[in-house]
Amino acid sequence: MSDDVWKRQEIESPCIKLCVIHPETRLCTGCARSIDEITRWSKMSAPERAEVMAELPSRSAAPKGRRGGRAARSGRR
Image (cartoon, rainbow, N blue to C red):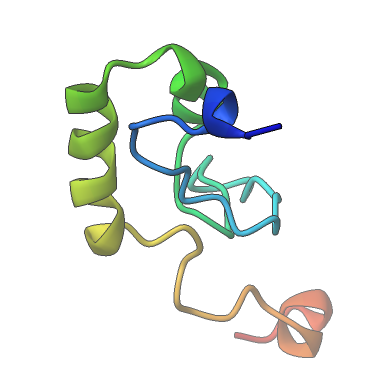
């Protein structure tokens, strides 16, 4: 029996199974897609997926700076 039925000619998902939505950017910290893009992925056309994939390298899912730590909690900054 062949698995040809399950082979699809579409863009693979950028998901790396590290699914956490950053509270500030609202992007997944694993793949940098928005919640809407993740939800719609399987229904998107190939050109739509290609467009999202092309944008992903330029996205920053999480801000680069530190969020605070001890100094923020003590009121010092």
